[in-house]
Structures are given as C-alpha cells and as structure tokens.
Image (cartoon, rainbow, N blue to C red):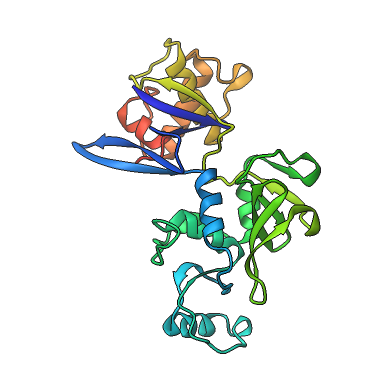
Length: 271
C-alpha cells in the first residue's frame, strides 16, 4: 500500500509528514528513495539563510572568488562591486527557492541543478497551478509571493523571507510593507493543506472502479487531460480510457488504455 498525497489534481507520494519525506520505489528490480520537498522544509531553509548575501544568478552555492568571477562574467551589470571574501551560501530571489529544491540541506553549498525547475521569478509564478491576487491569499506558510521580477517565501504570521538585493541580502520583511501583487503554491513542493488518501496501485482497465481509479484520474487531470463531464469519479469509462491512451501516446508508452506499472511510474514522475 502506497500512502499518496493528492493536491490540485496531482498525486505526490510520501511516507512521513516531516520537512522532507519520500517513498521507497522499486523499478526494474532496483530500489531508490524519492524525496518530496515540502512547504515546511522551504520555510525552514529560508529561515536558515537569513542574513546571508544576495548574489544575482545564484541558488545556494557557497561563495568564493571563482564563483564571483564566473557570475561577474555572466552578469557584468549585476556585479559592479568587488568580491569581499564571502564564504557563505548565496542566493538571488528565485534562487532561494531553487536552493531549497536543489541542495541537500540549509548548509549544503553544492546544489544539484535541475533544468526542469530552472525558472525566473515571473516564470515561477506562471508555473504555479493555484495562485491569485493578494486579497485572496490563504494563511499557509511556504506560499510564494510575487511582484514583477521578484519572489519571496511567506513564512506565516504576516512575514516574508526574501533574497531582496545586494544591499539587504536575505532578510525578513512584513507582508504588508512590500508591494506584493500575487501569491502562488510552489509547484515543486507539497503543502500541509493537501488531502491524503491511501491507494493501492493495481493494473487498471476499462470497467474498473474505486480509489485507485480516482487517483489515476486525478493524476491524468494534473497532467492536463480532459476527463469529460464526470471528472475524477472513480469509474473507468470511455472518457478515462481515451484520456489515458492520449497520455500514454504522448509519453512514449504503449497506448493500450491499461494503467500498469510503467504508466503508474510515469504518472507519478518516478521514471
């Protein structure tokens, strides 16, 4: 039995509700541990960076002269200052989020780059599936807040942590004292407000019914599938079969309309 976390039509696997959690997955006879990043972990990471320097174009690397020279060459207009011997981790605004996603912990200064998550602040907002204007923002720590070209991490209690600028570094500010325009759930982390359901992952075919079918339908919807007027109703009918075949065809799978191991693995983002 796999404990699965369903958010905004997307299934995220987990085994324990800590700052980071994951699931042991066995594919092709090999077992690996898949880590799921969380809103709680993002807040903890951001807090650990308070007081550290802002360097444009960085995402949690440990500062040194070589990194400075590399970034100065890449962004000369942003590095019109001299390296002063900093040795701490450094970030820019969206790099604060990337640093959490790509580093092994708050003090890890060797982030593992992931091209699929490499986005500007504006692109990060576009990627958020659930978002809105500030007057609709829920009280959920770990939500991202935006104004054009900038992003911060809401930590609760009316406060935000942001990698603000070279002058301010990573700092804590009042939500109401900065010109935030919009908010969004970071698409790469799980939130405590999400609903948890336990499902088994059997082979599913047309005619099947139950929680496993509903989980599969929600995953398909999360990947952009059209499920017809019934949506994720737990019943594997013609609309579900058509959506599944289209998903399989678009993702290099055998479009047989049956959800087996390979299709579950792809839907869950595990391979």
